[in-house]
Length: 138
Image (tube, rainbow, N blue to C red; front, side, top):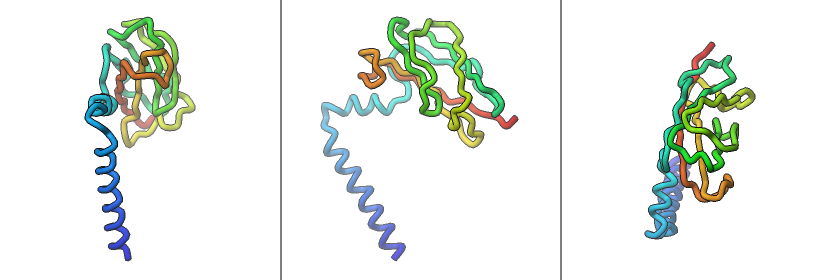
């Protein structure tokens, strides 16, 4: 019975992949590829504190080359920690206390920067940057 379940699961996964290929037309391929890239648009996102401990509550970042007039959205471990305009080459301190996914020591949590065309988090992405940081046991 286990073998039949595994075979059915594999068949469903393969069918889903082929349906995705059919659904995404050639005109959408460029947008789909861009959405999966971890570094699009202008600018650089740099961690000033690349390694934090489980006792730390602040991550420091610096950005350069981004559009200072656009609203910037920053999330840590998929939770929003900043929304507003940012100045290039200035160090920002982000409070990550209370974000459960910000402190695992078995993998590197994500810090993401996003700017969109219409200054709304749900708009067309024009700049997306992602960096990961390590957490050490304190």
